[in-house]
Length: 358
Image (cartoon, rainbow, N blue to C red; front, side, top):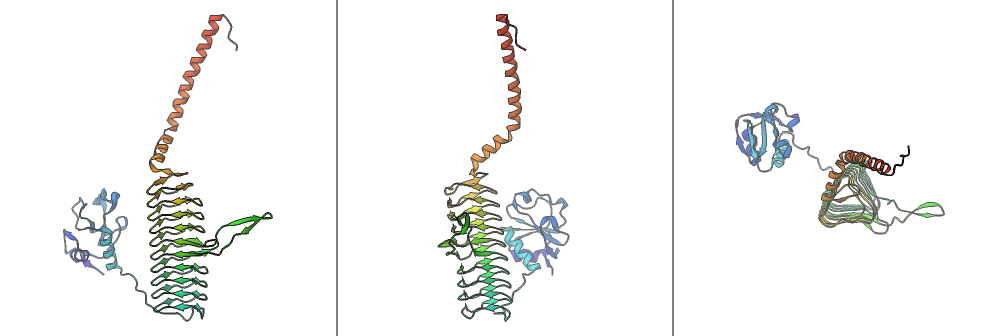
């Protein structure tokens, strides 16, 4: 498939600069672009990028940051939206046919499937499950008894929904995620760890996305809940009884201990660790690998281990970076002090005509 640069500019509603008859056969990011392809310039790093050694035939760039080099280009308002449209033109997304319920799926007679539900081979649907219209359950997924799935939701292969899990409309749950496993709570009886009650469940609001390999544990007595619009990356752990607010962003390898709560629009960067029974306020941002041991107020930006406000942590880090030089200065100062004391002792001994001890 190919298109002229002029045709692509019409496709994305951009302003053509240069040769409109240039034939383009594909699109690729800067590092991998080859002749015959169009690439894109975006972000702080790309804006300073020299296209002198770029092998692409044309470039897509922002109207506010056009390329400095003399290169055929398309200038647009939203680079990513336009580049996505161009990529889809050259490599159209694979269309998935609606095949209905596979005869190789295992479905309980008491389960209720709404209209236009797809259940792929070897998926398992338990007793009293409800699946809303337009939803898709991929191969190997297990939806256990009493679970409810809203309309237009996609459950990818090998997802496990334990008993009574509730998933809202238009959710996406990626491969290997586990929702509703037992919480990690024990009491010690006669020297043995005894599993606490596991009588709650997991509830996802509408438009939630759960990444591959993520786990969300069920509540002890009530639900572990994930608010509407929250996006959870791969390999995230959400402990039992947590109440995660709306439109949170939880990046890869975040670990949240039990009974933690968050407000809306909270961002947790990669590998953030949150202890149990704390509250993260609305709009808070937790930097990568932050260790949260106390409540975080609304709108705070926290970094470090243990996490402190961003400005305070940066001051600490600046001071920490100066420790080697401060150590050298301290040793130098110590030598001066030692010499001064030695001289003072010699002077005192001389005044008294007392020989100084060896």
